[in-house]
Length: 200
Image (cartoon, rainbow, N blue to C red; front, side):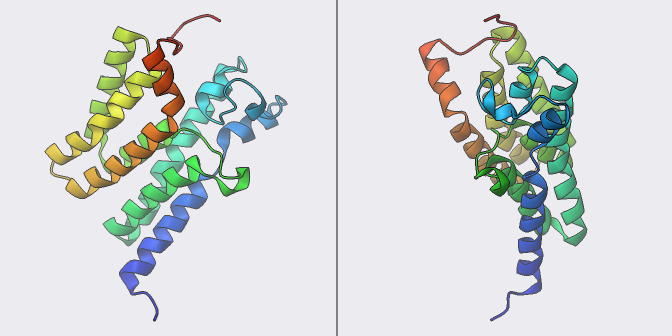
């Protein structure tokens, strides 16, 4: 039995999102810059934070932008087919970033792509995310803790703004983000997590 049109559109959105989300901008940018494989340094991650460890702030900023906008683009393209495909594309983009098939399903931690998907769905909620992140990052100097707290607040803000379906999506994305940050959470609990601006 063939899937109905709505299911087909949602599956198409999921596939589109995954394809865009799985583009490893950090790896691509560092290789084109002649810096080799970014997975061989620091945390071994392909995200902007690890790219920054190369000492190239411009490449880190480009990685952050690319990882965010691939999520935004996936949602905006799929939204032409409806809200269901857009939600599926947001999920697909996030999964693609976390588990890219091209890299043996070993991707980034998802903060930038989370932000990009959120930008496409709810700029006001993204503003709340940014306010929470900046406030905690400034006060406590822990980037990971600030991102975790902001991601946890996101579904609540969406629900309060009358977007329950989007809230469910970001609850799922937030759980995945927290799971990918398990090592950071352990270091935070042990008091060994690096602070913003900390040397060495």
